[in-house]
Image (cartoon, rainbow, N blue to C red):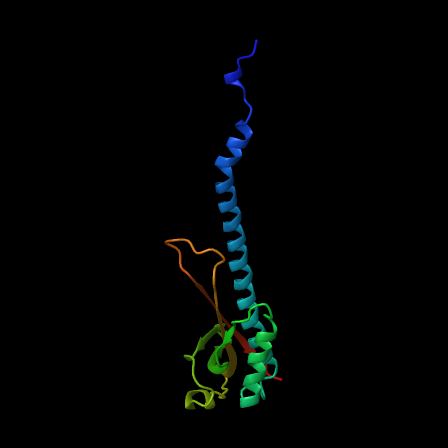
Length: 170
């Protein structure tokens, strides 16, 4: 004989009512984490694309129109990021001194390519060789707004990336 007050009818509905908020919260967190990861990858790739364009087109990349082209190359690589900011791309140089006998190399600090330390970096003797190494640097940044604002968490996230590529001389 069954007792009418001891049935299990409705227990599944009660379990669903208790676990659904936790499940929805976990799903929204996973979606938000995926969005942040996606935008982060886009920002990094945009910086790399801008630096790549600048290093390949090094001869004209740092004129006024060339800088605009480098910035546009970075923005073209991240079409889904509408608020992408690309700082002015720049170039810098390093003077490398090689000592073939010991296999060692030393570098000057990062300098402007017009700095006297860099412009005089072309000496070659029997024991050392000096080379100028050019680099292109592009920084990108965007701010994303989460889908859901939770107390205690930031209302926006700022994602930054920087890419430096060596320019290969022809």
